[in-house]
Length: 94
Image (cartoon, rainbow, N blue to C red; front, top):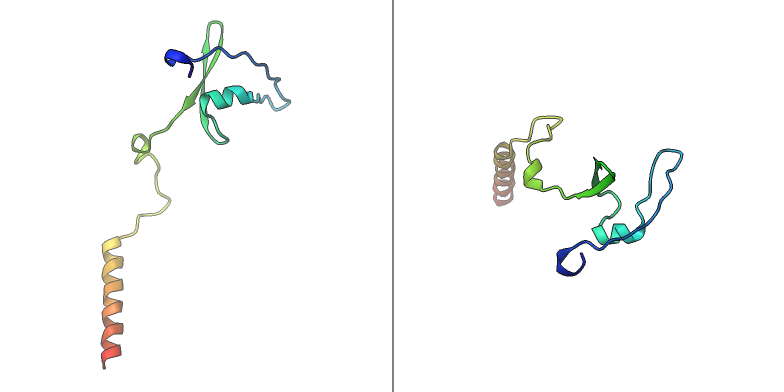
């Protein structure tokens, strides 16, 4: 960000590839703090397209992913481990 919290004006050009991809110029990536794998949103406006970085919040997306299988029952696992440790301890004593 520039002075006073304003985004400085940066003009750069980039060509569209055969796969219809555009490289965001390095100056702009650096200015926006973008790294490979980051998500951006394209907003079409009257005089062009705005690219907006998306900063996803973990809490915002919590529960949106459906697990492939049921979650583990950690209480059952803990009880099983404790029981096994108890058996091993008894065997060591006797």
